[in-house]
Every structure is written in C-alpha cells, then in structure tokens.
Length: 289
Image (tube, rainbow, N blue to C red; front, side, top):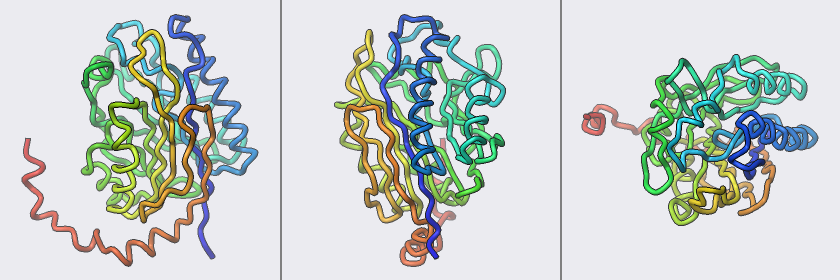
C-alpha cells in the first residue's frame, strides 16, 4: 500500500501597507494566512508550509532598524503559539517561517516546525545569508544560522527546511538528504529578472540528487515603496525524479496541494544509488575556507 501524504504550500501577497504599524502588518498577514490554512484543512492537507517570513513584507529591500521590531520569539512568540493551536485543531503539521529574536541584536531568518498534535519539534535557521544589490540586504537583518541542517520526524513524514537563498547551495541540500529528509520545504521571497530562470532548475535537481520531494514557495505581488520587482509565485511540488506535481499561479494568493507518494523515495534511491556511490573522502577541498 502506498504511503501517501497530502501536502500544501501557501503563496500570498503582503496584506497591509508597509508604513502601517508593525503589529497591524503582522496581524493582517496572519489573518490572511489563517483563511488559507482553514482551506487547507478542509482539503485534508497533512503538512503545510508558508512563505519566507510570512507575517510581513520582504523588508530586506531596505536597511532600517525599524524592522528589528518585527521579530518574535520561537517558540514562545504569539505566532508560533497560534500555529500550535491550529496544528492541534486540524491534526496538521505546520512549518512556520518567521523573523526570530534570540536576544536583543541577535536575529535569525527561521522556520519553526510544529507536529500534528501541536508539539513544537524544533527550528531551522537560514544558513546562507545574501547581500545582493539591489534590494536583498539580508546581512543587515539576519545572523547566519547555527543549528545545522536538522530533519524533523513528524507524524506523517521526515521533514527538512531550506530557506530561499539556501537553495543555491547543494551542500546543505545533500546534508538534509543524508539526515533522512523525505520532504524538503523551501520558503522563499524572490523576484522576476533575478532568479526566475533558476526557480525550476535548482530545486528539482536537489530532489533528484538526493531522492526526496521538494516543496518550493514564493510570495506574489509588488511591494511598495521598494518596488524591487515582481514576486512571481509559481510555488510547486516536485518528486524525487524532478517531475512537477503541482504548480501555483504567478500572481494570486493561493493554496497549492499535492499528494506525495513516499514509497517513490525508495524506488528512486534503489535505482540511482547516489548515496551508496558518494566519495566523501575525496570532497575535502570544497570544505576549505
């Protein structure tokens, strides 16, 4: 009997003017996502992931300390607590990407993982932090992650997380596979003209190279006043053969749902023995500073 897991991705535009009070921006975005989370529950989604820092706009388009106040603790902050209640209510695993505060001045781009009973399983902190002009000034806001590449045993599958810019680095994608990931979620914020030509190349390649499913999420819309480009959506699931299972639209708030047959992982890995044929003793050069 196939081991089928129904999974969902939420892509959305920012819900409120970026000049509004930060608490109102957070609440408006949480409210928008709660509607889509309920829709996912109605469709029987078992594992759900939102986009990168889903509670606000992609504020890294500017450099101002105002956005430090958009941080919250994980797991003790209000959004994680709400998502724990929601996960418990629906028996749903939820991946929650947020701007995390560990201490004053120590901030991370993080995703918490909540199991279907509401238990907080842990978090992944984005490891690769870009500083790419124009408009991606992330080193101003985020300290590089320090938790490695954890994989979380949820009720339905072993889940890993890779965040946005991380996807350009195959080393962490391989580490997630070696750590046992069956599904890797990549919540992102990326615009046309910069990365779109890579969007459906890199992550299907990770899926093939490591024999797991990938769920890639990108927000939609153009965010004023920065207007750094169009967040082009097209969130998708792909399988361990690199084939697209479901793809979102370019410009709509949307829930993308796919059924993932986890038995395919074994089938693919038994055909392509990439883990067996690795030669880690020959790779030392790529780990040199």
